Amino acid sequence: MLDLELFRDIFKPLPGNHYLEVTTKTDEITKLFSDMMQSVGGEFNLALYAENEQSLEGITAKAQFINDFKTPFRALPRDHDAVLLKDIFHLHQNKNMILKLSYLTLANTANIIIMEKKGILDIDEVMKQLEEFEFRTPNMIEVVEGYDLFIAKKMHMWGNGL
Image (cartoon, rainbow, N blue to C red; front, side):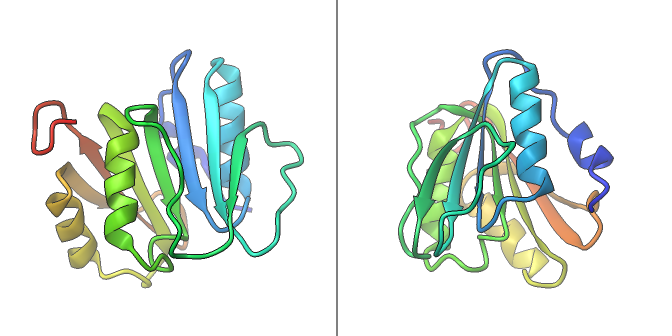
């Protein structure tokens, strides 16, 4: 069981917020997002890259199931206040597409979070990719044991400005 207190402190969900998790499996973080969004009357969307449909017991989410690592997830433009890419970024065959879709679905001043097990991703390369896709103030922080967590912000009127 992960200690998620510091991770939860990153988020300040408001009524009506929409959060999206793009991942390979449901876990404590999926449950945390579901509970956070329910507590404020928000919406939790889940894009699950898995060969077999997984149980969503105890999770309230609009879920889409994707069975290969080259297919994009679906999300409406400017619909999300946070996007979490968990254990998927290193596996997806088109990282540029994942970053572009994340950028397009985020509202202005919203955060993208990339979370992968420690040592899987090249920290400098991920920071560079985030900058190239017009995410600002990228940082790597340690708030969940065993994971590297990158966080960056989509800023209004910066770069793509979408």
